[in-house]
Picture 1: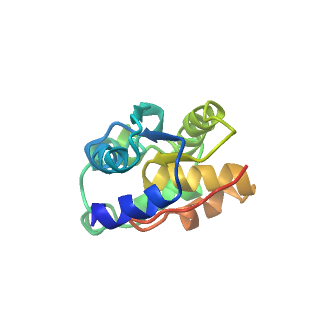
Picture 2: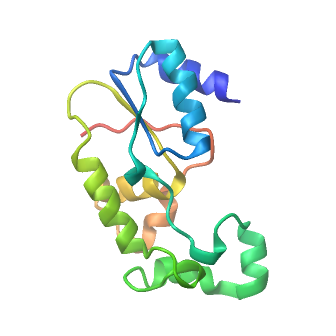
Length: 148
């Protein structure tokens, strides 16, 4: 699964590779680096949202245990903390705003990250309502080209 995605990304001829430092992004970044001779840069600001005690659990299991508690990520983005002590939606967006601010604005930059940060970037670039942020989450092992 990683090789075809790395091939597609390499065809874009990136000038830089940035990844979150988490195992699944590092693996793709290293795959891409081998195809481009670039050195990947780790930036933990691009890590996935902190889900507190929900970390590593499937959405179905969380829902069975908490019913619609996860809706708080959208319904109360400024104060709902997933898993009791996770990162609010607003905190994640602000973290990603900072990460995005230091991405070079020239060339093709491959940022290998996660669903939450991608949705946050889309929200920041498109100006969509914060309550629609979940619509910006992409399926795993896909990519999007964003220009700014």
